[in-house]
Length: 456
Image (cartoon, rainbow, N blue to C red):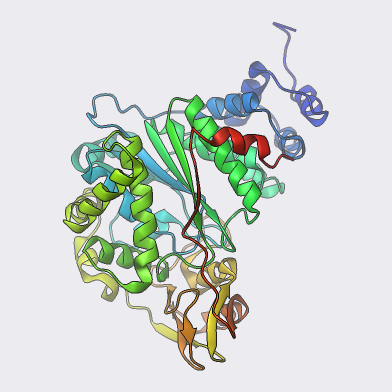
């Protein structure tokens, strides 16, 4: 077969029938996606075949590598620091990026964080940062390098030429019901993260009612696949399965999440933000350990807390914001900077205990308030979001305020209020909230998860 021309239809048939594709065949498909030389209908058919048949670990490794090098990649030679990053599979109120990036930089590492926008029920890191007036997320790679050299951390959006194959394939997956597949999710996430030239990567895999993959077996398998893929590429990788049964911290939206993160960076300790602080320190601890600045994740967490409490992380965050054009007056003003036109209190209809939350519906409520988007490219409101006043397990009284909603238009409240009515459950007896960290999957234990894992 060597030297023979490759044809997409033959590779569709081969994967449809459950056969393993060669490196050359996968590279041909990825190149065809990046350069748009293979018709969309054939790429879509191949994606569906992968969705139904799955991939071997060798196929996944080849697919991720080919996607990684389908465009420009970051080169951190001469930076003088090891590069580490954190990725989250998405959640509600998930603002750990604004804490872990400056903490890692404060520990002597560099974090070139390439992030995304809100789509569906999950918030977008870039949308939140752009609620800071002037903050530029669209830096070139050379501009990002300058910020990294100065601050040690830079949070930006994906450039046009970074992993173009993923941009094409993801747009097709979104339109062909082939998104929720562990192999395709892994290749999409890891190709972008590995293209960032990382020495180490910590991945926060969400579990629970607000997670992208609600099935915990699928979440574990995806986590193990990402560890396997990262380690094969020479990037030390760990996945931390964290709880998303309720919003992380107390704020969900755009500016309100920045303000909450800044409060923690300033040394604040609001009780309802303790889960956010704890998860951020755990993730940062792993980043510091994998980056070689600690002998264990536990020591890394202690260093992370030192950098948070002594103000170093706050200084670096402010430096990063200023370096990317952001207005520091907004940072200093906190919650008072963006004042929504309207507020609405959502109250408990009965007394009892807050025992359960459909966190996905809470996320949709935040989106409907104007903080998210239904279609790519739609604008979002900096002022929109909500503040939770209770955590799972809390005792509540009839009429007690469970959440405060923020919006620019009063007409936006009706649907979010209905969603919260359906999402928040008050029961007669208390129920213990789930643990913040469910499991940790690393190079040492990934094989057991891969053997026992979910396959199509």
